Length: 515
Image 1: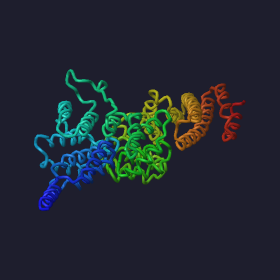
Image 2 (image 1 turned 60 degrees about the vertical axis):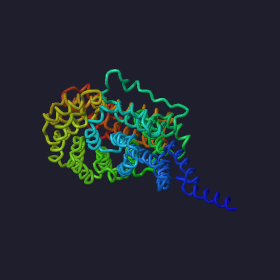
Image 3 (image 1 turned 30 degrees about the vertical axis):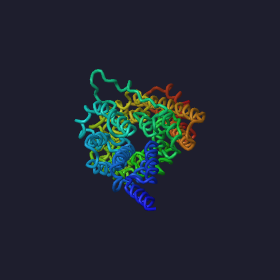
Image 4 (image 1 turned 180 degrees about the vertical axis):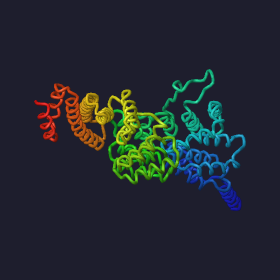
């Protein structure tokens, strides 16, 4: 009996001294599996387990895994432009507990150099971030080679390698190194979803890979955001794409991501729903107060909604911040001042925009304002500039206002020629809008709400352009008649006569020119 008692005592002593208890080991195995799955919520759950088990004698056996998951969480938060510094700080606090041979500070330096997602980040912040880490960029290829043989987990090292490489794809490379297009990112059967996801979001998101990751790990909601980016881009470029559902799913989980809120705002504005877009622009600016694209989108939407005072205040706020798109802030403030008929303020701002950039919109608005101020030579210069290039060919406002400029000069033939040019421009615009509607109606691979709004917008634009087409024909007829070109005027008045709204004016002109 004494021997049995002693054996039992020794057994209990051995159990008490085991670093990791069996239930905790099972939990650690589950946490390791969660890390390989790789979703944000998976990583959070794994961290909870590691932190719980990493106490007492078990801590040295778990601390490396806790370090890895904190770094992975920081990287994921960067990929969504969320607050990531606390996770990096927690990882940094663990460095002293790790074996020096693992070089944990080296892993942290790599993770620190990975920039946050640029969609959710102010450009000024992204530029400053990259500039501050400029000395690290030449080391990236060397660090990627080291990551292949480092002492921490292979999936962690692979993830970190893809993360740093993908965020500096256009960096200069040494002779003999593979160029960007030749870098292989294969997904093998044994590739864990964690790593497959990071490959799937590298550069342009890859639909097939992200679909495979989501199928393997249904909790991987982050994939919805990157798939939505593809769909929004497709909607903008071709009219196809169904981003609404993945956008809603991503927002439901990651409302604290300025990348997610901004993409929602951008898509709603693209869809023609500026009221809903404003909500998301405001949320983005709560998260990132100097997000230049969100500031501009908010200003544009307020302008379209005719919330003029708010739009002017928004543009003024932008101007005070001096963002990279400062010319746009001046343009939209000028646009709103012109809407209010405050011509001196509008002229001041459009001149400021013109001093910083040259494009069709700026020169068109400048010409309109200058015409309204009777600065006809300046108006002519800007409106002629506004007609240049492919974009200028579709700009019907410029020839219309050139006609008004020549009308003020009482140069009737020249004015009539410009209005005839405007008439043809509006006719082409109507045909293009009608073709766009036909294409939209035939398109089944498109978000239904987006499709409906786009068709409504095109139809409204057709109505406006048709009215302008007839008005331009009438003006051209009237001015050619004043210039003595009566036969030409008669042909044009027949076009204008198709608009019932012009019936009285057409009848009066017919009496004058006889016909």
